[in-house]
Image 1 (tube, rainbow, N blue to C red):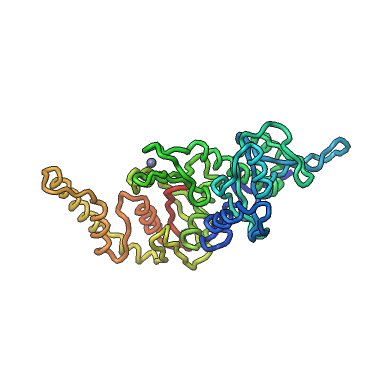
Image 2: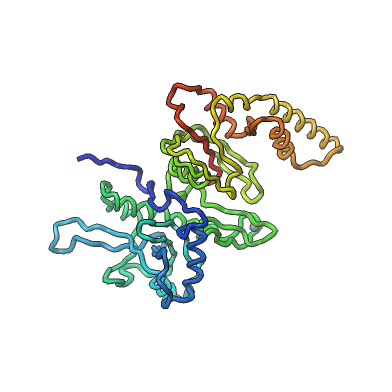
Length: 372
Ligand SMILES: [Zn+2]
């Protein structure tokens, strides 16, 4: 029998392949606003479009139900995720004294073809065993590892559900362990429908993102998603290049691991998300080669070194050497290419050096990810 595994277990999450733009009704921000309006109206809320379904977890275990099987059956039972309505979710939380609000839920992603946005909720007070009977389904919380073993890995639906549950579990776990700011001890509050958190202390404002343990997607998938979100370009094949520790990010997110990939474009139209990315442009290899001269970097390097000397002598008190560098380079070069200290420089120069006539002559985008 051919296994025909499309991807690794827990990768290939169908809810994460494309995050809708913020103006889209399926987007985290739009869905969150809609949720905020609906929750106080439950159970008399109007049917929303898109509709909302919630996947409850207890102690890391997703709610599921089982179909098929049974005493007289010879077929293998099949487990399904136990999605519940907003109304049932509110009831489940209320049964242990928790008032549901919009911050109780975390955004998992949309099923556009079903006009649906999916959420997860942690209801960890729940007892073990069969929870309740909703819509004639007997629901219970089951360990993810058990579900993994029980999933039929040639069944796309089963693997999709496993990936969704894996992502949701990791995201909820991250919410549990990131309640307080590691910098100032302030309370972290959910942002972007639970996709990130931020310290509520205004003087601090540290942003916290789910990091390496709960991306809920493979690196290749993250590259495709991020490229699409920020440039509107769809990429197919993704090739790893290198990684670089980057402990010099903005104060809200100071330390990151940069991951560099080459990605082959499937579409050419550019639609830049200006909140995330300053610009995106297509250039010929020849033009980039011309721009990639080292004179400006050398000059900036010498300028910065002189500045340090001045600071050490007490002559100058500049804090912003990198800003100076950017300005100088940007003015001198026909297009701005970050200096050799940045992974972007190495991605670009590698691409230039590859020349034409090989596989890389296809449209290609260089991508570096600062967060997953
Ligand atoms: Zn803080």
